[in-house]
Image (cartoon, rainbow over all chains, first blue to last red; front, side, top):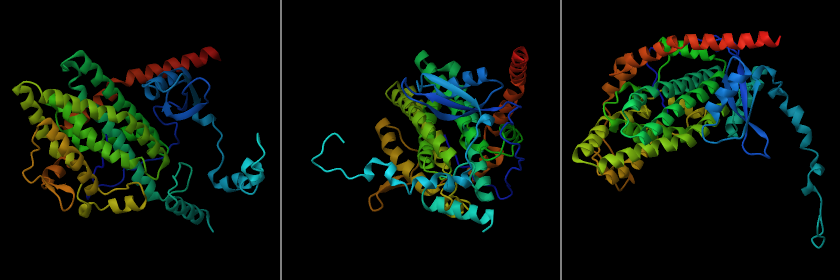
Length: 116
Length: 312
């Protein structure tokens, strides 16, 4: 369902104080990963709050796999993830752009040659 | 260039390139606040929306309908959770959103401030209310904020079952006894106008729409979405043999769209301001559920603590 609620003339944005993401009744945040089928990797599906890993798994099952979305679940404390810095994305990933020779399409193969 | 300038330039470049903005990216304060407000309201709508439907679980006409309705209400809870998670990536906490909802500082869709008086109303919620919601949500899958757009993709996939089951209820009633047929017509009479109101004020009166369109949060205007919904739904009502309660409704061959009458904007604003038939009851029920559930949250936390201690 969805829903734009029009803004009343006197309405202001609700004041809020950012407290980090571990803020739901003190329950930490968990990231949920689902393996869709055997033979595939676990892929990030979303997140949820839970007091511990076991309850996070139970909630993940209810929230993210109501329609046979997977055969295996991982839950990982969000605070345990170390992420690359978005501001450094250019310097981290730029070097691949000037090394086209790492890609098979860089090389010329005579059309009459097979199995290459 | 300062960090702020660099961030701003990058934000504008992402929008221009139709790329998604992600949580760690710099974003203007207004963009962040608009998204928090919109995503939280969307989440609250899913959660409050469980009430009018749950009202009929114990009285569903068959076991099949009861199982379907329970699955649907469970989906709404799930949709609320996806959306709360998306809002949290912007720096607001779950508890804070709950507090703002319970204190009436955050709103939810006015459509859920109407009562479900008959079984046909459950059909109308699926067919019309979810139909209107899908129209809006398909647009939101193209929203510029990544976590919101991803949530919408998942929700749209699940939501199409909701609309179909609603239409099926209406089709079954329409083919039933004269009394069942009348029940279906009464439902349509009650839900048609509130469903059109879901798209919000006219574009000319919607002051924040323009900014949301520039930020690519919103991709289609309120009036265009409403027209899209009317054009899709009128032939469906004709198929059901039900009359849409609007004397001004007619096909306009020149425009290639249906013309339709004016919404009662006084009613619209009255419900938004808290004076709809069910506003007080919905929030009172939500607060009671939160307070009654406190022991469950405490027990879960105590259980987790005891297990931690046992391991240590």
